[in-house]
Amino acid sequence: MLNFDVLVIGSGGSGMRAALEAVRQEGLSVGLMTKMFPTRSATGCAQGGINGSLQNADPSDSIEKHIFDTIKGSDYLGDQDAIEHFISSMPDAIRELDYFGVPFSRDGQGRIAQRNFGGASSPRTCFSADVTGHVILHTLYEQCLKHGVKILTEWYLLQIVTDQGKLCGVVAYDLKGGRIVPIAAKAVVVATGGAGRMYWLRTTNPFTSTGDGIAACFDAGVPVKDPEFVQFHPTGLAGTGILMSEASRGEGGYLLNNKGERFMSRYAPEKMELATRDLVSQAIETEIKEGRGFGEGLSAYVQLDLRHLGREKIMERLPQIRDLAITFEQVDPIEQPIPIRPSCHYSMGGVDVIDYHTCATAVEGIFAAGEAACISVHGANRLGGNSLADIVAFGKFAGQGAATCAKQRQAVNQGLVDQASQAWEAKYNAVTTRSTGVTTASIRDRLAEVMWNNVGVFRTGDEMQAALIVVDSLLQEYQAIMVPDQNKIYNTAFVNYIELGSMLTVAKTVVLGALNRQESRGSHCRADFPSRDDANFLKHTIVSKEGQSYNISYRPVVITKYPPAERKY
Image (cartoon, rainbow, N blue to C red; front, side, top):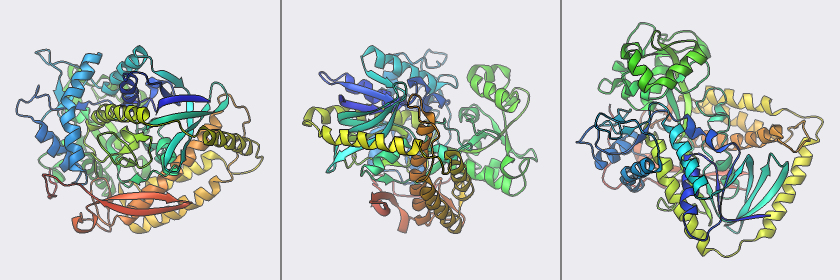
């Protein structure tokens, strides 16, 4: 059995920042467990930038303006005390990244460059061309290696083991070694990212974003908060869903319909293409629905036009955008508009964090950060540039919280971790020796279809009720899946099977939360309840599990300085 004081699960920006912070505390053993090579996480896909009020591009910007933009962007569902704590920490967090060696783009005076992003009142998004997440991720990896974090690469989380509401450890599958391993830990940080692959090919997320940590926490007794708020990024490539960064609009790109109109003038005349992501996504889908898109059905799209920016600016500021457009759409944005359509991008909801100072959950020893967590600083809609900000800020807080917890806790019940590991050995043998049953791909594809069609950008009660029936049916079918591979070394078929279970679990919380929220707010847009309803729904959805039942309750939103107001752009 392995044993750590602090075990971080997930190697994205929040996970590595947490591990780095924990390992800098004297006398603690710190492990970082990841199902892929550390620099292949979703953070590496984040292109556009990281928000912080450095006042380099606009001396009139301020932390207070950033706080208000975030609250307004959240459609007033963000907890304002947590947002104040988060935003106030960002200038120093960005300077810390600079000190670590992140190669930020610079302005003419050598300062960190900042660009415009949607929903922001000032240009405060710091960037490194259009590969900001990539360079942050690699820099944090270097720092983790430098400080001696023990990295378990290609180890997959199977279960978080608890005893009477307290953490004991985890069970993991070592893909390279072909073994199921019990790991005792005094504290874990769950930083496993979102669950965008429940929409399968209509997402900007990597194939590893399957909600593993969210589902494992849920099964371990930690509730999920606000799962219905799923952000659809306005500009995914039409054919693949691959992200075309918000930087493309921040640098001045236009959105055009089949009449050649910059149609955002109808939806957000002041902000145009730089309105919030939920509004722009809904506008694009409305244009397509009303016949002003190109193509038909699932292949329909509008255009992102960068041609007027000129070759030099595109090559300097948006080189990856150009490369992706050429590779996946055979379109050179220097010469032609890019076909785009909204694509599932981010989970505002996630593991219910009850202390934003430490990122602690309701189960002693379990902490969560990044997209896997809901703190809640993004509310009903996240601003572009606030996700990379989130992971470095709350990754650090989670690492501090987990380290403090590990120092205070006594030895954990290792016997329960061993028992859980043995149960997983039996489960592995059972599913890999079945000769009949449904396939993982069959269930996965039907899940994606019903989620996109019934729980997508636009939603109705009838459609979501139908989706709930389908998801429940798929959960039943899931019990009879066969995994036709008994080899334990690199059994990716078994991993895909467990990932599908996580996606089904998270999908059910999304559908239940959305079905019960009878209003439109941020990314949650209901055609049958088109208005925001503060009187009845200015509150967080809390989904908890009791046996096999999913129970819903609510918690008030924390309001400090800014009472809810109509959100206009």
